[in-house]
Every structure is written in structure tokens, then in C-alpha cells.
Length: 182
Image (tube, rainbow, N blue to C red; front, side):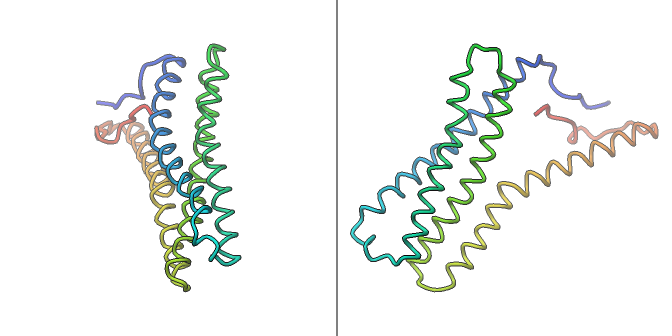
């Protein structure tokens, strides 16, 4: 038995479903960004802020700017949707909102690494901070980008293998490797 080639839905239904899924993803990311950004804004008003050296102050400014850019990118899809609602542009809205979300994730990666650098420099006062941030940056990259790209590559190679089996007449595809209609 062949796996289905995806959901049977109209382009509008697909766009509605994808928009709902994107909103769920954005809720998680936006909450985290807003909390992080709130803490970053409060740092400058702490008495110890005056004790920071120039490098740490510069890292702080870069971190706040990155946090602002991240918030803009992750809140942007909501504005995009709101301004285009009712104009029969849902598929285009989903595409652009998805692109803005990916940009927001890249900016969030940079914001997290910058915030970690500032915190670990203040906490450790040595080069270990750079090594720890580097290790965490690799972990973020793996979790947020490498693992999903790896899953895509595996799915594509599995699909190619199934197509070749079909050409050879084997036609016995494994059910767990079918398309899930994302």
C-alpha cells in the first residue's frame, strides 16, 4: 500500500492550516523573546550596570538591539496578517510570515548568544565564557537548524528510495516513512 501524497485540501484550506500552525509556533517564540527583552531592558537600571567595562557595555547594547530586532521579526507576522486580512492573500501572507519567523529565529539565536556572552563574562571574568557560549551556540544551531534540515534530508532520501522501489516493482513502502502533509 502506497502512502498518501499529503492532505486533500484546497490552497485556502492549506493556508488556513499553515497559518494556525505558524501562530502556535510564534506564541512560544514571542513569549520567550518578550521575557528575555524585558530582563534586558531592566539591566541598565541596576546599580551594578555602572561597574561594567566598555566591552561589556557594548555587548549589552548589541544584545538589546538584537532583542529589539528579534521582537520585530517575530511580531511582524501578526501585523502582516492583520493588514492583509480580507484581501484574499492568505497563501502569500503565510509565505511571508514564515520567512519573517525564520529570520526571527536567526535573530533569536544571535540574541541568546549575545546575552549568554554578557552574563558569562560578568559571572566568570575569564576566557571560559567564550568557550561556553561557543558550545551553547553549537547546541542552538543543532536544535533549531541542523536537526530539522537533517530530518528534511532523510525524508527526501526516503521518498527517492520509495520512488525507485516503485520503478522496480517492489512497491512495499514502509508506513512510517509516508508524507505527513506539512
